[in-house]
Length: 276
Image (cartoon, rainbow, N blue to C red; front, top):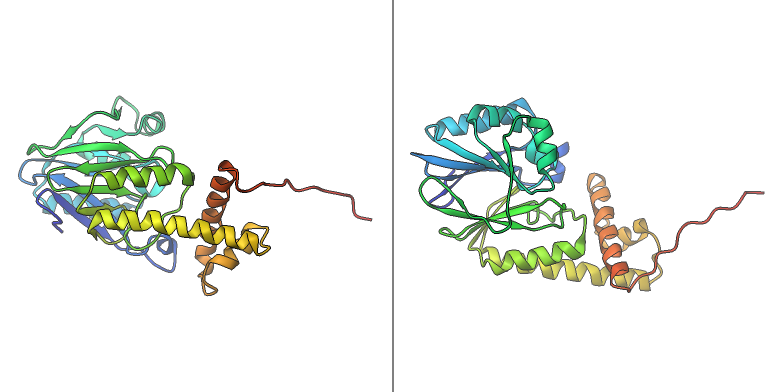
């Protein structure tokens, strides 16, 4: 599927009753550049053979352009799976956050991994430029990529098309969302879910959503909730799917950690006594 002049995507559908429950709308793997010449690819999906075969089939559909690099948004397994097979096929360097580079180098061997610089510009085969943005929050090694000519932001897992992202460090994440919004993207291409039109308003909506959730957590604490599970029950819908409850708990935990960093919440360690 062609999204803009320089952006193409193959959509991988996932089973919503299994691991796909975490990725409503499936996964998208992007090819950026000129199919008649040279392109880069963003992320490599899960390690399943069928996923790699679909990616390679789409590459053939694009008339097998030269792949100058595989750009990685972050080191989660559903974004670097099959990377060894694809890198070997394309015979190209892998670019990633410096914190992820040693791990990928260990996986791939040789000298195929090259860490990104925060100030560099990546040029595709037809002259379109991609700028890496170091955007920690979902993960500490997270990178977004901004395609200036098309005003497209590849958001990895920092912004999803059909759901909210899980977050490791909320304070960093909100700072990263603000940086992403400053690029003023017209289109956001997420790692999972549907393509987002009117990208900048959607990013700012996500910032407002996180701020509103923080207010809900504070209200829950003020009403007597004292554990993560109690806060989840207070702020999330009663019909929340069991498969999503752990993710909800992790999100609540990140809000509590941010509030602790801000001096608004005090954490009390558990104590133990012998039973009589």
